[in-house]
Image 1: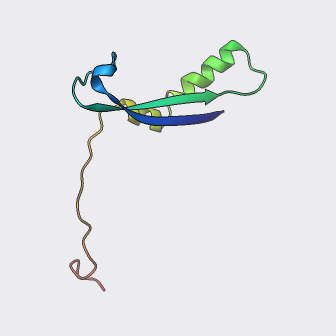
Image 2: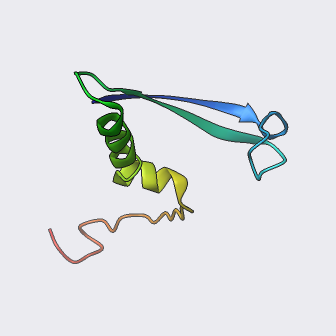
Image 3: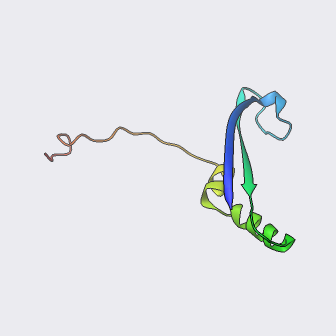
Length: 79
């Protein structure tokens, strides 16, 4: 299986399923390319597995970000 992602920003007011109502929201489209002689059940199982991958789950979860400046070697007491 191969997965292609596209990313773009859309106005929140143009997004019917978004909770955000102001500004712009990120929209990521995922296209699954499933190849081979697979029956419907096998294809469905691959899609189910793709939905459980860590990246997909992260994109659908609440995400907290933080930032800090790295300590320089001299400030940390090492050379």
